[in-house]
Length: 381
Image (cartoon, rainbow, N blue to C red):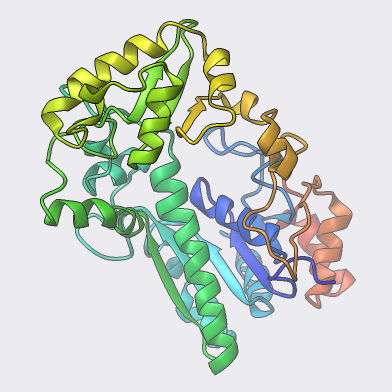
């Protein structure tokens, strides 16, 4: 049986940080053979070795400032189905590794480019990080409590949702096209574009007059009392998502407020939300989180505990599904016919580098010379 739906796909990742390694991990989880090219020497403090993100791939350090190093990467790309890179626009062109160079030698190659701002536009050459990209696209503005400043989320919205996963979608889509036509192409995956696409529901609600420009006062941003987080007696929190009326009624019943017509009538009227929020806040604050977990374990009130990352790994539902394996998330999504195997990380060794280069038709003497000259080496952490 194939090891995942991307079994047989060869990918070369020109090592970066943030979204590009996560995209490479995702493709490796789904069965692709991924070779990651890193710079020689220890990993940078801002891009340390991460055994979870780095899993399932082979690593080689290559000096891209050396013509021989560039030639090695071009040899790898010549046998690849896709290349992933996250450099600023123009950097790889100057090194002789741009799409024009690699597609000329491998016309069916999919060249996936990951940037924050995109390959063109006034900000294309500017530095930035997740917080900047989600700020410019309106996502950051909508996160936070009413009357307060925007709240910085973990860098999931920009780097990984708007960046890495859109890059993975773009690359796999282009691979389908390349297999049908024999022609590769460049995938320009900009985080700002991906986050803007993720904001589609907000743009749609706003156009329909159902979303205001204020944060923390709307249906899905914590403004609605039946879609927000509440503090419990022990200082922990529960998340409530009882949007539909049957779930909302079950919520009220669970917290001991069932039969309160004043909490049901006009519940979608924003003017009623402060009174409903006060009633629910008082109810949840009376007992610890574990109490509410037990109360809502068999109910449809859409109440769940707010768990830490460590706690989540031990939740009975996630344990039953095998959502976590050896302390990290299992490959997602799941496939009935080509299930993805777990992709444990294997530390690179010099023999791996030799085997990798031999797989790409470099002779033993060529490999010896490249290693002796420091052009290629095992990746260091």
